[in-house]
Image (cartoon, rainbow, N blue to C red):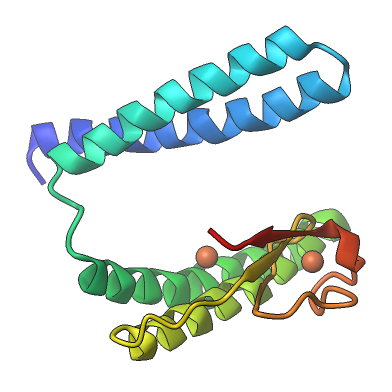
Length: 165
Ligand SMILES: [Fe+2]
Ligand SMILES: [Fe+2]
């Protein structure tokens, strides 16, 4: 990787992390009743996202949707099988129960992401329309059905966010 590519990758990673952190800060500010601060965090988060996306485009990492689906499927498999698998073991060895729960539930959800991509790859030409429901606790994604309880973390139906757009 040349130096410019490396710098662009670092910019992309840094901006992506900052954007997420600021979204979480905004939520916290909202809970604490600081409406304007929440708005500021959301605005800066959005601005960081623009920087991150721009770096990705300069890196020429954005391909056509069919290729993007295939790449996303591969990366989900890796995350579930390699990264989270190791993280679960590390957390178990350290006796950190909170981290074990987080890593193992995330691993289960990453496996379902891979399945959703696989399904989408076979549906690619059909333009099947479905509403997805995402568990706000663990990130579990349900395809077309609002679950009574989350199969991964046990959260009730009211914790699911629908995506129909
Ligand atoms: Fe994922
Ligand atoms: Fe869940």
